[in-house]
Length: 295
Length: 128
Image 1 (tube, rainbow over the protein chains, first blue to last red):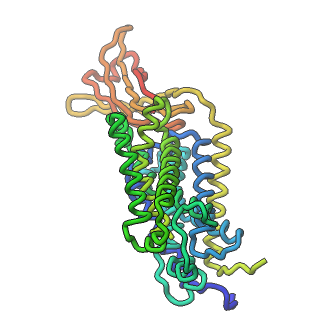
Image 2: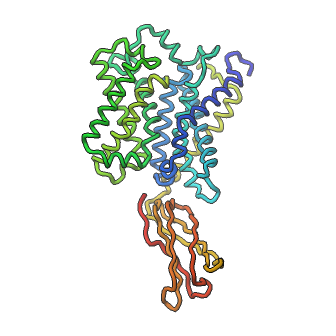
Image 3: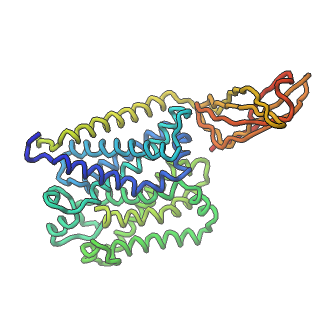
């Protein structure tokens, strides 16, 4: 316990509180969404299981590539992911109870389902919150994977999602996390289906174009904090490549979330596609901002 | 292997989390393996009629014994005497999840205690 290398209690408490704040920041809209409560008891347990496993893989990926301690060993990454998921479950349970979504006369199935569905987004939020919301005081600099560190260590940064980037898997993971976090806030709602059904093909093409333009803007031109290092090598090929890959990730993330919330059940193919494109706008924002904001 | 840098607080949080995560996964696997695909199936429990000013209130609790959730469940309660319907009343339940119970009330002008039989049924519901 007196080992110098150990973190102090205060430090770890701070980290947990930061995680809790982050979890709530990113998932509060979902805790207040009816469709998400319903998903807890409508979704088949196997679908829930897939959702939990997918979220856990995403947490592993995020903790590996974008987490607080980027030097962490695989075991530490796994431990952190389990902790984040546990915190997610606890926070979701407390808030659902506060919101009156969990009552004593409900069946265990219903209570468990609701908590599990909500907890997954909270867990991603906890993960992002722990890594992102911290200030850069003192010894934290040494083990944190903060942007300020990596940019000074990397004098010749390569643009986001370009072919000649060694850390491609890491960037994909971070982008996917951002896309899921953002898409999850809109995809479960009835409104996505309504917009998708009411939009004609031209409007959907517009959705896709606006999404890609937004993605390209955020990644390469907006001068966001952190974009400078991506913008150095902004050849047209890189811009197109990065934008297309980001949009593809966004579409995959929004399709996966829509499928989980049963939005594809019994729908025609074109409606499924339309829904994916509509919620893909939010996912693109998340995917492109992911690299800049989440890391 | 590198020494893990963890203090007792972090170990406690980890232990609790591990229990939660493992039991969540275990529960889902168990539940998934044991959940069939039988359609919603309803069971009723009619409570004691309570006389009000000029009508009677009967509490009804409906349990879905099936493996699927029913949406928009329309419940009808009929008062029967001598083989004919005396009075019917109905109410709607937004969602009735599998293995779950929801409660509602129906009101009658006829005193349910004076009729031969009081029975309940589901008029219809949809798949969510």
